[in-house]
Amino acid sequence: NAGVTQTPKFQVLKTGQSMTLQCAQDMNHEYMSWYRQDPGMGLRLIHYSVGAGITDQGEVPNGYNVSRSTTEDFPLRLLSAAPSQTSVYFCASSTQGGVEGYTFGSGTRLTVV
Amino acid sequence: SQQGEEDPQALSIQEGENATMNCSYKTSINNLQWYRQNSGRGLVHLILIRSNEREKHSGRLRVTLDTSKKSSSLLITASRAADTASYFCATTGESGYSTLTFGKGTMLLVSP
Image 1 (cartoon, rainbow over the protein chains, first blue to last red):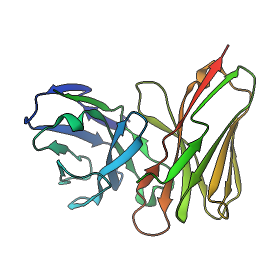
Image 2 (cartoon, each protein chain N blue to C red):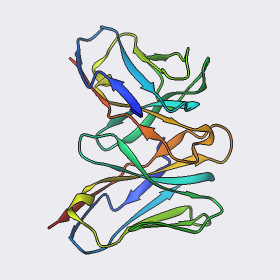
Image 3 (tube, chains in turn blue, red):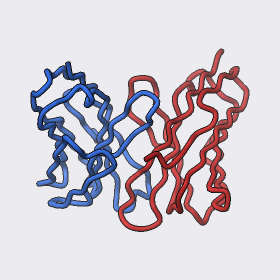
């Protein structure tokens, strides 16, 4: 099993550009989440989904959109990139309730110039 | 807002020594989890302890949970250089969807 796959691994954007970070999991997990990690800040929740067709906002949702049309995929869209969105982005998935822990992707390092 | 705070922020020890990291959190939880992150990598789940449990073991890892003090500790026994990483505690809320709320992490350096 591949687990959680994130693409791309690295990306440089200009301010105002838009892009989609891809996340796919092959474990049939119901729950999927997007986090951003900034130095000294730990991980902060952006958006999450409890199943196909259901999404909700986390702690820092502004400037990001998500959709969940299938169980496997949970893309994160940056609508108009800003330097404040420079960060490392992690996608994670889990079974219902997360009682077995979350599986994380390897991350996307995004720089907005 | 951050739920947990790890202590210390950084820890440097020699191989063979034990490493203890602490985590405090603010609100009632369903469970508390510990993750490891090697430099430049994703997070790896280490161990989960439920709110009705007080201690849990997994290999060289021992986790304790004190819900009255809203705190947890992670003990790594007989540390190895390969244990060098950042360690994060994360909690899930008492009810509803179990999104993870992370602390800021402890950086552990194990020297040969």
